[in-house]
Image 1 (cartoon, rainbow, N blue to C red):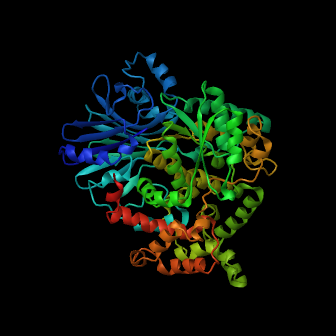
Image 2: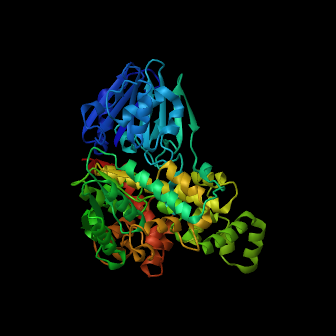
Image 3: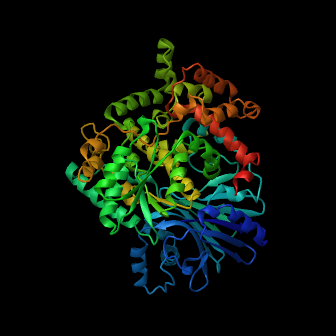
Length: 617
């Protein structure tokens, strides 16, 4: 797990080494163990920071040059099946110089070209340059777990693992076209970011540079994994899922450093902890956060799993003061306004756990692939289909709205499958968007890829759009503490399998995530499996409504002259919400718009008003 900066000069001018060092130094937290720099003639410059996970020796140094000096690579992430690919390449007598997965990527590319992407199980972003042909190949993993950003000006193409690497190079500006998407959904999906002219290489895409021009191609799309021809029984599906998850956990345990599990007490992380404990020959660590607010406390279930599998469990109590103190630093590392308050908690946990381990496994992705959310209950799907019918028939919708005046017949002009992901009341969203969501291109693309099937629309919104923010959280908040977070549920084989299982099995007899829960019965107690889902909650609603450090920071921020003067803030919209909060009538999950407006202001101060200079230590 690492970070890099890559420069391709447009004007055949050698990039200044001191500037590259400064840009790479902005992401030292991604790689505190080593740094490396590479320049080739007047067109290519690469900077790298290393967090040593596999082959801790100096042979893992990057940028890594091939044995014949023709190719050079910088790579961030992990290829979990690198041993199997290496064995295949060794039969071809490839002269490996190290035991790293980095060299395996390089060798695979030399052997199979762009087809090598179909070989990799992992999370990755990398740049490979052919120094002889002066071509460059850049790729990002199939699900988009690892980041890769692109910025272009008159002189250079700049690629980087984090946007903050651009701060010593150019002046950044906010992308105001994406502000509303963040306010509504707490994340921005697709190519766009909240920084003007800074773009994300999309999940499952690669780029090739040749003769001064770039081409881009999609090599993987989740919509292609929706296979309706699954013929096995529910019991057979459970057996297949158990074996696949065991294999995924086995691969994710490959490490030359200490590792552990983020244990929430829910089904997903408990399953990972249980399976990992059976494969690791020594006692390993589990980690959790607790709050004194009892409704957010799952410590009983965490302790049960730890006791049953004899892990060394660490529980870190987190209070309002801790949260408030870490908020600005979390925003700096997160780089966008924070999606969910639990991202701050993830940073807190990673900082604490880093004293014991370097790699931590987590349970992201199970709810999205095996349908663990209430929006996938049969009753919810029926409602979704009805609202989708109204959405697709505007004439009927308008007539019903005029006849009844009910807001439901107005707000179904927004695609219901897309907006079920919003934390906010859709009537409030309508007041903000006024019917125009055409700038939400990444989310609209996922709707189009579903081919008109309402259930697939909902699935792709979860898997393509919503899961992306949790990958962002895992990457940014983990790497902020120089910690690698791994997600065993999130591999192509796991998603192919989950999406091949019919909806009626994944939500079997009305039970969400039924297949995974049935598997879990072998590993954890039934009352733990079938209890009410809590999720990774944070008591910010409680903190906001009482006198304390969080509410004081909040009031000082949104009542400030700077916030009140922002031209990109719909002041009327915010005032309506803030007044409702003040009089006690505002009721939205996780503070809704109160949270997104607040974070947007703090983020703007950090990245566009030099606030980052005091945080960049």
